[in-house]
Structures are given as C-alpha cells and as structure tokens.
Image (tube, rainbow over all chains, first blue to last red; front, side, top):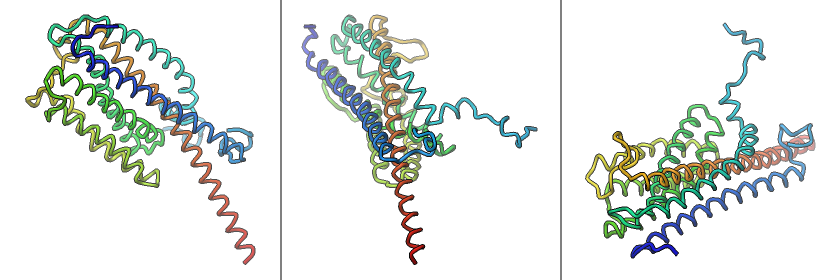
Length: 59
Length: 265
C-alpha cells in the first residue's frame, strides 16, 4: 500500500469520486445506446420502418 | 457561373457529409473501439505516473489530487465550450446533429464540473484549511455547474424537442460568458486559488516529473470525453429515430381514422 502521508484519506476519496463518476458516466452512455438500439429494433420488428429503410426491408 | 440545373455538379461539402446522422453513426461506430482502447492505455500510463511521481516540495503527497482535479476542471470548461459552439451551429444552421451534440454533452460536463468541485474541496482542506471559499474561481465554477443543471432542466421542462433545443441553445450561448471569467478569474481578482501553472506565456511552472503525468491524464480525460460524447450522441440519434417512427405511426393511424370517418359520413 502506498504511504500517502497524513492526508491519504483526502487523496483516496478524490480518486474514489473520480472512479465513481467515470464508471457512472460509462454505464449511462453504454446503457442508453444499448437501450435505444433495442427499442429501435423492437419498433422495426413490429413493422415500423424508417423512410430510408422502406422498400429495402431494413433500415 | 455554376450550372444550377445540373444537380450532379452540386455536391455536399465534407462537413455536411460528416454531419449526416447516418454517416456519423457509421464513422463513430468504427472509431469508438480504437478510441476506447487508447483512452484505457493513456489512463494506465497517466495513473502510473501520477502515483510514481515524487511528492511536491510544498504540497507533499496531496499534489496527487492535481492529476484528477486539473483534467476535470479542464473538461468542465471544454465541454461547455463544445455545447456553446454546437448551440451556435444549431441556431444558425438548424442542423439537428448540432443539437444532438449539445444535448449529449450536458450531463457529461455537469459530472466533470461536480468532480472538479469535489476534488478541489478535498485538495483545499489540507492546503488552505477550508473545503470552500467564496473566491472568484470557485464561485464561477459553481455557476458553471448550475448552468449545466439549468440546460438539462430546461430541455426536460419543454415537451416540443425543437423549442427545447432552441431555448437550451440560447441559454448555453448566454452562459458562455462564464468561460473566460473562469479562465481569467485568477488573474483579474485577488483569489486564494493558485494562478495558471501549465498554460502560461512563459511556459509551465510545474516540475517535469509532475508535468508529464498531468499532461497524459489531461489527454486521457479528453479522450474519455470524446468516447462518452460519441456514445451519448449515438444514443440520442437512436432515441430520435425511435420517436420519429412512433410519431409517424401515430400520424398514419390518425390519418387512416380520418379517412374512414370521412368515408362513413
């Protein structure tokens, strides 16, 4: 374990907060894209097609 | 004079082609895995450097907070600048991708601004003896955080997406005044916050053993922002495609119902 002196708690909490924020943002960004991809696929499966996809059978 | 009757001679510029949502989805899908790998590698190098660097002669070990505080603060300002540029693009050219960019960047910018405030507080306590002081730099960054929250809330408060986008764009441009205030606050006013020590006319004042991990971390955070922004933009484009499909379907149903009603009358 690194010896970070008397203010180690301040340093570790800072890095912990940064890790929490980065992980939360990554989960949000990846999850949102995945959710919307599934939603679009579901709509297309139900027969709702984009104008560009009509006539080609896909979008 | 250009022959405007011959449509083959009119080609969209590279920017218009890139700003096409379908092209954007294709290109971003290709570059994202490489950008993600580069971001992870830079974080590995930057964090190693951050913990192997010698303690500062004045600040001791607490200087290690700098390696996440400074890049967070940098991203907080860069992200807002991108929102302001995107907002100007949306108001001037009405390009939907500019609105997508502004909307997608707001939660990311808000998070990094909050992180800059939190890590700044945690650095301030051992160095200044206080978590918070109402000086120009800290107050202007707090205003930036409220601006981000305002942008997010404004979009959620207006149902019609076009009107929400325009209102948020106007607020973003008005709030952009705060960015030079944050940057130069340490020069313009007497403040407890230290003056700029990296980007200076006479060169950085930080020792090279601390400077290189800081620069690597700054690049890593910037690439992280690019990855998150592209991902959030892709999600927003897909959301708008879904909403457009549903709206077209609802309009189609309403039109069919109207036709049947007219036929029965």
